[in-house]
Image (cartoon, rainbow, N blue to C red; front, side, top):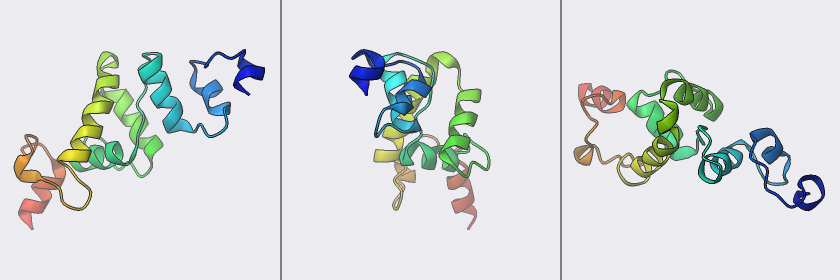
Length: 119
């Protein structure tokens, strides 16, 4: 399809990227952000978990809801970097099963930490 429909050139827009077999919204956002430097937020499990725990999103039940809230509230020039910051924070500090809150510098603003300290 890449050869036939796009002349062998990887498209830069999300809609065209998602036409490619195996490319969903998250992958399209990663390609658009990393390869084409577009201000889009790929929301994987780490980004979704961290954004909800910290309170960067409000009542986001789906990755798309989280993506929309994050891109609406993060300055355009920081979105690509913020994506990587959230992923790394989720992998190494705000882990799914055993969050490392004692190593985190965001506990003063983290909704998850504040709530867990009260219980």
